[in-house]
Image (tube, rainbow, N blue to C red):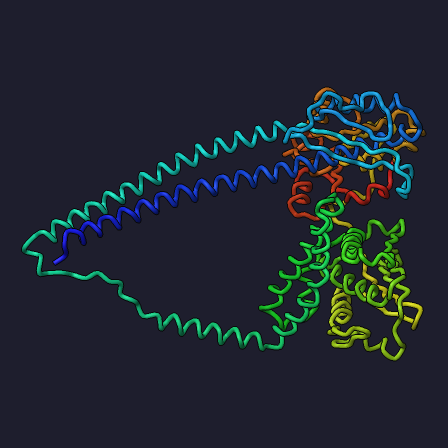
Length: 581
C-alpha cells in the first residue's frame, strides 16, 4: 500500500511539470518576440542606411563639378538646398575644402542614432588624385523611436497571449489536481487498497513501417543507378559550379552593395533555381526527345539583356584575375533582338563557353563577347586570345564526353550547348588556332518582338516629357537624348521626378496639355509601383514603363491589362524617337 509521502510525491511532480511548461512557454514567447522585433528593426535599419548612402553618393557627385571649378558659392548653395530638403541630415563636412555651410561645429555627433556616410571625390575618372572627402551625418532617432514603440507593443501583445496560455494551462492543472485528489481518496479507501493497477505505454508494432521504408530505400537505389538519373546528376553538378562561385564572390562584397551587385545576385540565384527546376522537369520524362523538351520551356527573350547578365556574373566570379579583360560589344542594331529560346539554358551555354575562355588564358589576355545582326539571325561571338586548340581535336569537342586541357573536365559543356542551340533551330561553330586563340559563334533565329515591347518613342513638337525614376542616372540618359530634340523644337520640355509623391502632387496641378510619361516600376521605400501610379492617375495612354523587371509575369500582365508598353531599362540609350507631325 502506498504511503502518504508517495501520494504527495505524485501530486508535487504533476504541479512541478505544469509550472515548468507554463514558464517555458512564456519565456520562449518573450524571447521569440524580442528576436523577431530586433530582426525587423535590423532589416529596416539596413534598408534605411542603404538609401541614405545612395543619397549621400548622389549629393557628393553633385558637388564634384563646382569643387573642381573652385565655385565655392555654387557648392554652398547646393549644400544648403540639400540640408533643407532632407530634415534627417544634421550637417555635412568637406575635408580639404572650406565651403560655407559645410560645418558641424556645435553639433552633438556622439549619439547612437547618428549615422555617418563617407564619399571620396576625385579630379578624374581614374581616381588618381583626391579632390575632397564628403562626410554627411544623419539623425536616425525616429527610426530608433519607432523600434522602441514596436518593442513595447510586441511585449504587451506577448503578455496578453501568455496570460491566455497560462489560463489554459491553469484549467489543465485544475483537472490534474482533481485526478490527484481522486487518487488520494482511492488510495485511502479500504475497499480499493488491494486492487492496485499499473499504467504503462503499450509499444505498437512498427514492422509494417520498417518494411515500407525499406522498400523506399530499395526504389531510390534503383533510380540512382538508372542511366538517365546519372546523366542528370552529372549535368547539374557541372552547371551549378559557376552560379555558386559567383554567389560566393558577391556575398563577400555585400558591404558595398549597389544596384548592379543586386542584379548579379538575383541573376545567379535565378540560374540556380532554373537548374533545379530543369532537373524536376526532366525526371519524369527522360525518354522524350530533346526538341519536345526544349519547346515546352521556350519563350521570347531579349538577347542583349541575357548576355549582359551573364557577363556581369562572370566579371564577379573572375574578378581576382585582373589580367584578363572581359568585354561586351553590342552593335547598335542588335540591342533589341529577340529569340524564342530558354533564357536560363542560353545563359548556361554561354557560361560554359566563357569559363573555357578563362581557362585557356594563363595570366594576361582578353575575352571579347559581341552581339551583331546578320540577316534574320542574331550572332553571339565569344573570342579569346588564349592557348588555342589543335586542329585534330577541334571536331571532337562538341561530342559527348570530349574535353581538352581540363584535368576534371567531363565533356558536357559544349555538347550540351550544341544540343540545346540546335534544338532552337540555331547553330554553334568553333574556330581555333594554337597560341592565337579560339572563337565560338552562336547563331539564333530571330523571333517577333513581344506585344509589350516599346519599339520606339513617339511624341510631337509640343510634348512635355516627364521621367519618373529614383535612379538619377536614368534621368541623365534621357536628358542627353532629348537635349538635341529640344534644340530643334522649342515646344518640347523635359522634367524629372525622383519621388512618386512629388510627381503625383505635380500631376494634380498639371492635367491639361500634351504629356509623355517615362516611369520606373519599383521605387525604394515607396509602396506604390509605377503601374499603380499609372492606374491611379489614369495616364495609361501617355505612359511607357521603363524597368529592368520587364520579364516578370506579374509586371507584363498588369501592363498588358492597362495597355502600357514596356521598355527594358538598359535600352533607354538606344530606343529610336519619332516626332509626329
